[in-house]
Length: 74
Image 1 (cartoon, one colour):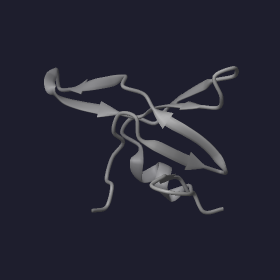
Image 2: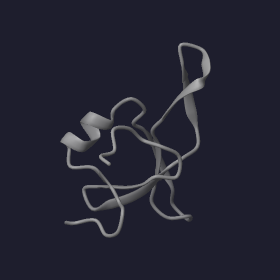
Image 3: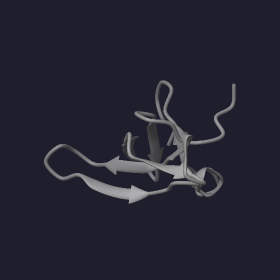
């Protein structure tokens, strides 16, 4: 099945950098059952960086980003 959006704890890579999608979410139209994820924690425990890609899965993929299922191709 093809991924169409971010989900919590998803492992991702972009430009040879690796990250994990956090469990931080945005409610869609105030509906607690409709949540969008996309805040990515990049880097190591000693030097984390966060970026908000919520709602931008298509852009993330267009820029070369992908979900890591085994190994990320370079």
